[in-house]
Length: 71
Picture 1 (cartoon, rainbow, N blue to C red):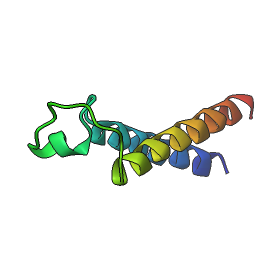
Picture 2 (cartoon, one colour):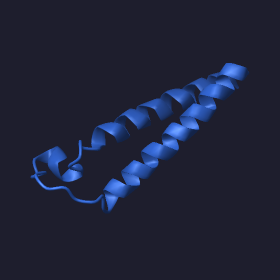
Picture 3 (cartoon, rainbow, N blue to C red):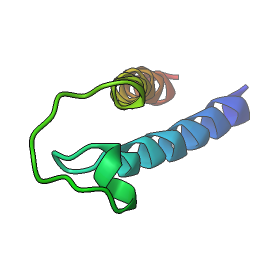
Picture 4 (tube, rainbow, N blue to C red):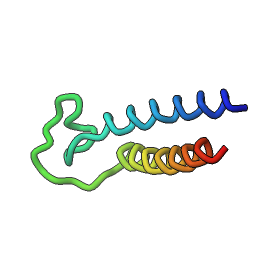
């Protein structure tokens, strides 16, 4: 059971790293692959889902880390 928690924590941490790297600094996914990011735009489409995925993943990671600490 402990090995499953450790593996899940590892996979979740890699997912968080990838989700954070996909988020461009203030410009969104458009500028990550060469698009122009000169103007400020609100997050739309997949950018919203990446942001939500990141937030949920970090929350689950925090709870799982506390569980690993207690158990």
